[in-house]
Length: 190
Image 1 (cartoon, helix red, strand yellow):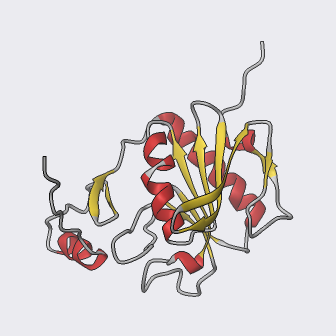
Image 2: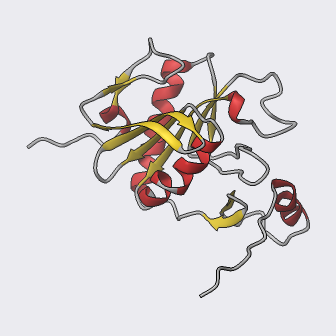
C-alpha cells in the first residue's frame, strides 16, 4: 500500500474557497493541518456547558480580555480552527481586520461531548505546535477538564486531568480561579 501525496490547503486558499462559494457560508467546517474538516453538530450538553463557561468567564474577566466564541483563530498558514472559546488580548478593532494569532491568545477551551478524541488528539497537537500556552478540553460526559500547558513542537509537556471538584486558574490570570464544576451541569442530589 502506498501513501497518497496529499496537497494541503493554505488559509488563504480556504478563505478564497468560501469567497467564491465552493464552501457555503453556512457550512460548519474548519481548516486543520491543511485539511477542511467538518465540525460536529452541537448537542444540548455542549451548548449548555458553553453558555455556562462563557458566562463564568465574562463575570470573572470582564474588561481584561476579549472573549471569542466559536470564531476563527489563525494558528499558521495551514490551520484556522474555530475553538468554542478563546480568551484574547484586547484589540481596539475587535479583530475586524484579521483573525487573532497565537501571540494574541491567552487560553483556548474546547467543549467536548462528542468530539473528545479530536480535541485531545489533532487539535491538541496543532495548538501545541502553534505555541498556544494554555489549552483546556472540558469533557462534559466524564465531568473532567483536561489542561494542556508547556507547548513545543512535540506536543504539550504538561497534561493534567482534573475532576469537577478541582479549582482552576487561567495561566495568564493566576489570581482568578473557579471550580471545574462551575462549567458543568449541576449535580442533582436526592
